[in-house]
Image 1 (cartoon, rainbow, N blue to C red):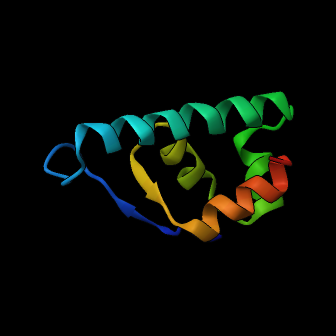
Image 2: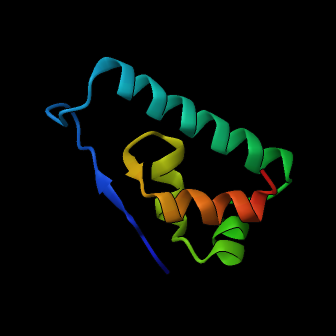
Length: 79
């Protein structure tokens, strides 16, 4: 399984408040798309090859996704 992102850590991550807000929005939208597609995190992992733990971190805005991760998720979710 692949985990492709940069950890943001708790505080001291260098993100502006605007960037932090966009990261949270991405996580909420990822979860909404996954739920709409009726997929569990595990099923999304199986279809995308992205580690289930990484998907969880993305949904909780704990990591910054790389472009290829976003692309892989979008392909599977049809967005």
